[in-house]
Image (tube, rainbow, N blue to C red; front, side, top):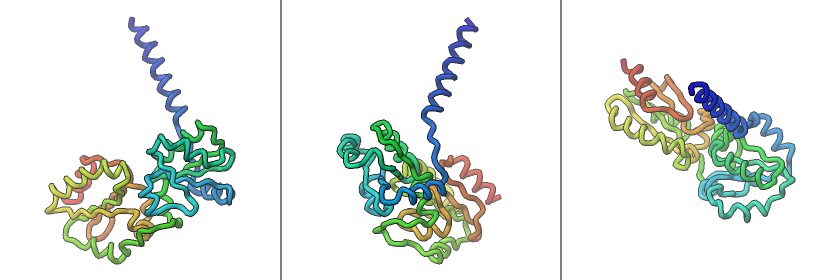
Length: 237
């Protein structure tokens, strides 16, 4: 019986490993992506996998809005494209772009490439976008907002970013529970593109903690409340 259970366990592990290997995505480096996009020239099909309202705010030049959330519209939208031409896809990070890339490959598209790091990294590295949002806060205005006797926790995010939405309740609770020692500032990244470029914010969400206007901690991506509280406690001892 023990041997049978061990055999079943080994089979399950093997199946899990095989699944992870088949679903793993190998993204190009950002430099390799830019070179490939440039080489594609006029043949490049650039797809924005976000919501239409996100596309209206900021998008790459010549990009087509391809709402990945609208599954019923996939056939109509993909029929406008050429399966033999190089196709480049982006979203905020690589969540929705990964979904669209998979669906296009399954539909017979031969050359599908995601922007590594998505639009967050593209803007954070200062690459150009077509925008209707303006530049937002200047670096001087941002630095002025950091003036405080308290610690200052800055949350760079987007109302369209799933990871940012999951982090919001944590940041809101810290703002309330630690109001006496921590000042919390939220920055909508895509409405402050120049600032994001100046600070080198290349992923959302990004948290930056300041003491006396100096960075003492920075974290990109998912962060637990316990981790943030531990960092804050370490700075207040």
